[in-house]
Image 1 (tube, rainbow, N blue to C red):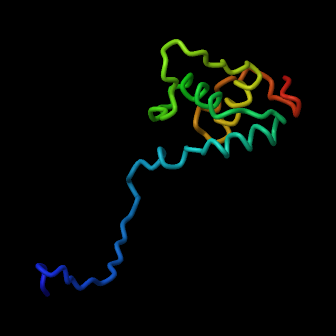
Image 2 (image 1 turned 90 degrees about the vertical axis):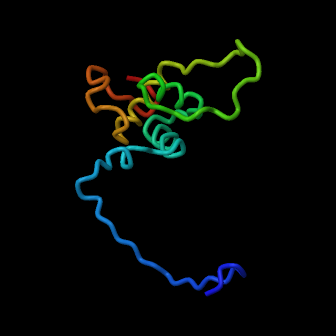
Length: 116
């Protein structure tokens, strides 16, 4: 084998490891924005934006990474998520176990029109 010429022989290596005993809950409870949008649309008929989903996730302390397309000026107008869409997104977050099931337990579920 000659490293100076960049000639390295390689062989495939199979690595196995067990997740037993590791906390994998953070890996299981993360739905994509598309999955959340689809769930809300299917169960309420409401179309929700990724902005609204991000606002609701932030409200519940779900950490998001820094947004790459932030407004370049301070004080730019950002639309606030309407209450009916907020509730629908919260129900989707509950469905995907991203927030506790007992959240909003006192409220009636949304019907197909997004109304309780």
